[in-house]
Image (cartoon, rainbow, N blue to C red):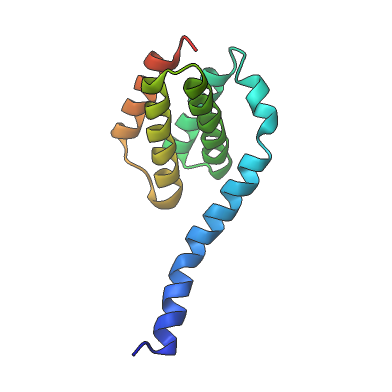
Length: 123
């Protein structure tokens, strides 16, 4: 039998994830203006800047912006059927979320950022 305190504890453990999900939905809903910028030479330099700030300084806004730009990049890669770029962009998005939640993966996160730059530069 589950006690009330256990139910409360489980629901309180989910609260940070719900909060993150809520802010991601809000962030992605407000990112439609970035899709047009993704067609320019803006996307990778802006993604690099924000991802590095996220990984090095754990700046919340930089992590959120980099995640939005990563989503734009993976969508664009999917449209042109560059699945290597799309897969790497999804992995980078995971690293950004992990950094935001628990401090990241260190050098491994920078390695995937380098791979994204090499694989996605000709979109």
